Amino acid sequence: MDILLSIFSRVSPRLRSFFFKPWYQFLARSYQKHDWDFMNYGYAPVADQNQVINLRAEDANYRYYIQLYAHVAGAVDLRDLKVLEVGSGRGGG
Image (cartoon, rainbow, N blue to C red):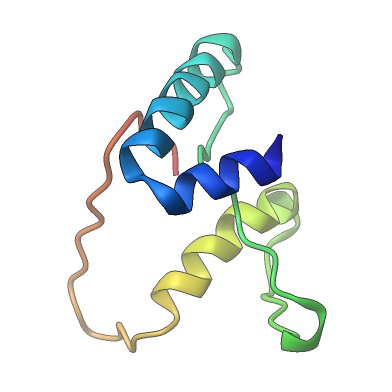
């Protein structure tokens, strides 16, 4: 199933949206936990990249979700800049 969805995603953005939007909505409705802080798929670097980030103990359970932000935003030096995160969907991250 994962391979099929991956192929659809590459072939057609519309087809990807057709499959992923209902799945995303289903997750949002089904998971009613109040401490659901992130709603992204996360990021796990490949073994040879050695990109472990230091986290506070209370953030350890959110490692992969936080790593996604670190990976994307870490490509640019953001010191002393104001950054606006623009997302679409339900948020949660």
